[in-house]
Length: 277
Ligand code: MG
Image (tube, rainbow, N blue to C red; front, side):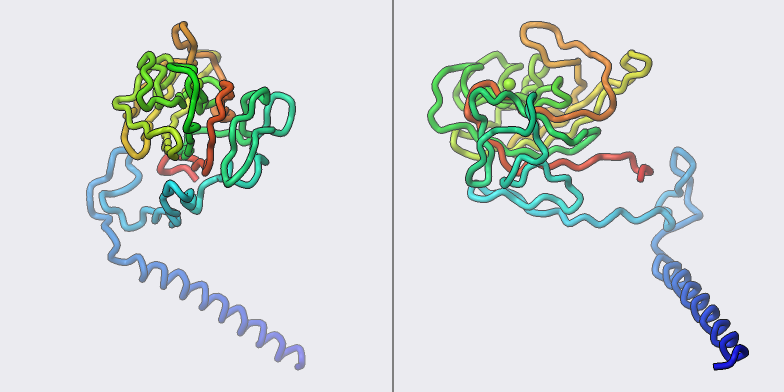
């Protein structure tokens, strides 16, 4: 090929590439033509029209599957898995790697090993966690199967055997410990797997002052037990909840209260604003 031919071939390639890109844009426009409108009123915020055809499509997520008593479900495709039943790589205790026992796809609280926290720093999120109380438990009230799902080591969604085990309401299973009892008691029997699905909005601080409180929405075994309830502050024993400034992301803590509670299938999804990437 002489230099003139090479030049022509080069131009040809550029023309073909441009045509392909042009066709790509055209096919995108064609594909989205008729999806919506531009002659409709602007929504508050002034960015999108009602039914705006140019508004980005939601990202596709495989929703996974629900759990059964026999088997944990599959997390959604965009979840961060904190525990899949095989290892404690995402967890540590005060001294190093977490030491809770793992068997049959669950972890079990082991005496004298302390509470465990995630290495992941979590923010506004959807958290899924499954837990099970031992079938035979000594003790009553707060001494029966006590553990806890504690966001940032501060805000506790209580884990307790609350099946036929009265205690103070704001300390029963699925309570926001020390602040809000669950709206109903949807706790299953000991020995059965139970599921918390939790939406957590992190409180925000500026210059050491609370500027926006936190919120919890909680489902216990699929039953709504907190509906966007305002966080009052840290979960405390026999003292008022209190806010202390902290960053917008932090660890999740699973409480070791000395009872052999089991956990499986733990994952979270970051929750962002509509326009946030
Ligand atoms: Mg607890």
